[in-house]
Image (tube, rainbow, N blue to C red):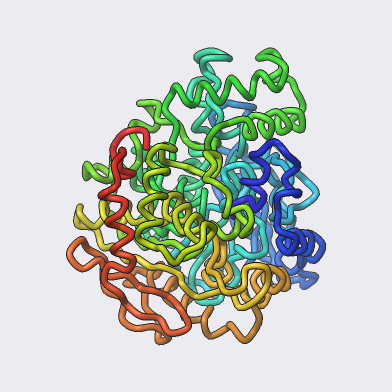
Length: 534
């Protein structure tokens, strides 16, 4: 998930000072009340053993679901491309939590162990033999925080319904998304895309090994949320990932949040300067590197500095440009965003202030100023805070996801689009549909205490979660998203722009928020769908 303190931290002040008090309480409660349910090793004796190409792994059985955690799929020296994990002898204990990638404190509760050797994955699989469809899920966190073992993305409910779920770690921050070839030499060229290289290696591991767990390697759905969704879009733009997935799901993402080589070099220079020089890059302990990347991020004039780099080689072009050109795989796509994404990051007081460049991910500030004026004319009833929430939600999530859906549908691929309008029933975001609210619905975890603190979710919301989860299951199984709890979900195309508006009573709307979409097309400036930097 995306780091909740992201925008507050960018101001150079202590991140926690910028959080709404209720959000602080929710974050602290998340850390304090992390349930061990998804980490606790079963004491039963019916643990299962599976032979992979690297060796035998031993997992455990929990509620009739086989669970394997912390399986190594790769290894990597600092700033170097990943390599397949070294084979082992004996049994790998896959009942211990996966290591977490080195990162600054964030919202997601983490295990005690952070390590640069973090390329590990988790698998939830049905206990019965079979040939099951597979979902590989990429966690979010602004490519700076996050972990494959976060309880909200545990895949036990997918496995209980006949889908194998895989979550995987990848390198974050400076270790995964800072380009250092111009500093350390040719051997390190491309280091700014090592996080993506990790994900490609993980997908190859799944292709080679998932059959041993009962999975169908030809029926892999690649999915992600937030920065994980943007990374899924980046993989759509990667020739190296072609053939490793059959479907894709993009929850609150987009396909154009990338660096040019010049931008990547400039941000890298900021990290190096704050670390104390290039000679420290390979020898400094990772906490020092994390401290330097946080300082560089706070000094960067835009949001989301840890992003892939269009280097003309590994990532040849902006991912959206590859989709527009018809060069990306024409896989079925499910994509959408939440109605009030930016509400998670900005309190009403913060959102009421003038627009700040460090809250903007893709557009120039000149265009954002023009759009802000256009929004003021189109929505005169909005307060400044309401207008900025809506504009920033569109800039980072709504419009980029729409452009991806348009491009993939135009190339003949089946596309289904959604908008999550259902409001959080309680917590600090009550009445809004903010960023992350989709995750406990997708993974069917509305009864977690952490989600009660954050969104006021409870067992009373189970019918909502069941309808959403069933629709996701239908898509992963190879069909259209569908559930008895919602109307028939038609495909999205440029003619009707049919969109499932998911709410207490879900409805299909053609071109929802069409007036807002036209504002983006009619406002001067480089459009978000351009095949250049933005």
